[in-house]
Image (cartoon, rainbow, N blue to C red; front, side):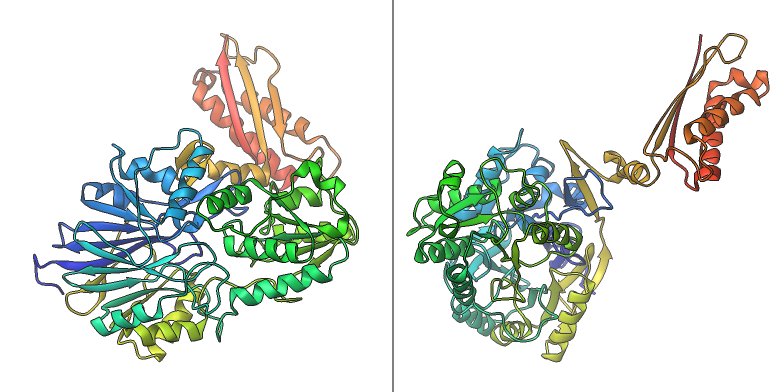
Length: 561
């Protein structure tokens, strides 16, 4: 236990430690009651079928809001949605006066600006840009950005120095010795930091269950080039829009095969625009316009498009439904998935693939050819990081429970002296003294639903789930001054079966239940409209359960004339 009043260094994950995505980490330094805080990343994850209507899942930042006056600054490690996608939505909660700068690389800053242009009422976020290798200070934290390789331009790890020790926050990284874009992971600098002494390594766990080393991005480029060169018809390649190196590799391979390239998908075009402005797309010929597509022979075009995760509004899904005006795929064409499946998206991806297969289109995946590689380190690469940096403390982050557990076991096997099995909300004291989890802070998820941000109750998710499961019945009852039914009640049912198991009209059954509930009440009790509402609600739900086996959401409106 730290002596009372002595400055301490703590780590608090509010997202990304227990799930894939929604990464948000806090580092605190100072006396226990007066920490100053550094926020690293502010990401989103995407909703599954259990969150109908929700657009994005954001980290619950109640804890940071309560500590807002002590928030020294924000650093974004790279411009993937799961690391920066919540920034525009949450910035005003973090800095109501809009004065707190956010530190990002030039590519990250360009992506944030482009993202803001596409969102109504997006806040004006002051940006301080930094480059890999640069060193800067935020409050009591001395920060050094270290270049690494990943599946996006300008990713960095952060060396965070405090008087209590040096913490290495890896962010997303891999040890790619032949990347398609950007510098190598800076092994020499990591080794130097290890020589200086690393207190704690906060490390990516995404591929901690996969043995060996990841193939290089250059090998994937060669694999894609072979697929394009051997294709007879059109080739459509779907990948993550942020993977600029992959997009450039595909475009160069297409040019080498004598093919024109068409970009499809708003996010894909936005990323390429930013990358072009920063000089990352040199050597790429002008892209084909959609209106020109029909005039290009089938064996002379490559489409690079969004939709690798089965998103219903993405370009690939629309092509599978033949919803595009100027662009079509036909039997004998090829679709290549140059991407991994994000957990939770399996069903949507399979639906799109099956639709394409039914159209006679050849679908190529990672198991068929080397068309994708992850941007995260496998176990041998993780061991290399431990050897370079030799930390006293290891903290697995960025993963679900299985990834975190496997990574923790690997850290222990490698001889890291102390390994912390942290989860979202855990306040981990790193120094002074032995590391330990000393508190649990408020954490969880909030949701972006259109222009509204809030918890499941605020955005109505609980009732939406019930609606999707059992529908909705609305009943209007009008009583006269003698407390009798003045006019025939109105009943509207949405999302319920037409007939019960015996063929009787279910709406008629519910209507009779509503009328019966009112007529069975003593006239004196009908004076209380709330009691009438309650009785009708219970009667309709009970009748639905008896006839159907489910209880719909019921809304009853009672009035008097």
